[in-house]
Amino acid sequence: DAKTTQPTSMDCAEGRAANLPCNHSTISGNEYVYWYRQIHSQGPQYIIHGLKNNETNEMASLIITEDRKSSTLILPHATLRDTAVYYCIVRVAEGSSNTGKLIFGQGTTLQVKP
Amino acid sequence: DSGVTQTPKHLITATGQRVTLRCSPRSGDLSVYWYQQSLDQGLQFLIQYYNGEERAKGNILERFSAQQFPDLHSELNLSSLELGDSALYFCASSLRSWDNEQFFGPGTRLTVL
Image (cartoon, rainbow over all chains, first blue to last red; front, side, top):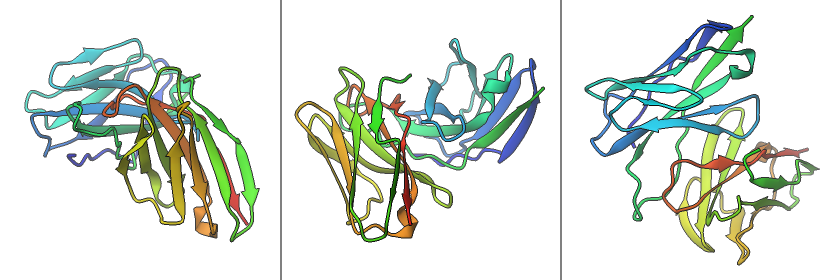
């Protein structure tokens, strides 16, 4: 799986958009970008994933650059409850020969401030 | 609520002891994963089971073992415990063996004194 690089920490004002970057310059063509978050020692929570097109769900949007070497997770209207560690993970495409072993890096600690 | 349950929530024990952590996956999920989160190592994958069979192994110590039972619940056994084994242990589950969207339980906090 390709290595990812994320800033250690970021702040965001409540109600504003939080933009969390992730660099994955060695990503392969069959690798997806996944985002998880972990709120204060709770179990990690899946947020969103994508291959090359931008994706949006009820939690967030994922913007992947055209060369796929970086991506940005966007929380459109951050709330205090979004304060968490956000992990960007690059994983090979799903298939019966692969396992679901997730490799977590250090992630980005997002602090949403009132 | 992810649908994954873990017991116990907290466990305090002494060095040299053995403990068993239990995980019940989401209804219908066949794959169970165990992860360890310590302050210095972050979140680390330990082992995966799929439909009763071991599927993948991470940096799991020889003192640790796991199994998945016919009813799909899983147990992680930690023996000869050391101070450094103090950590949060998470179980996750997914439907298939290769799913990258996994559902995590609330964790078991193990403290070894």
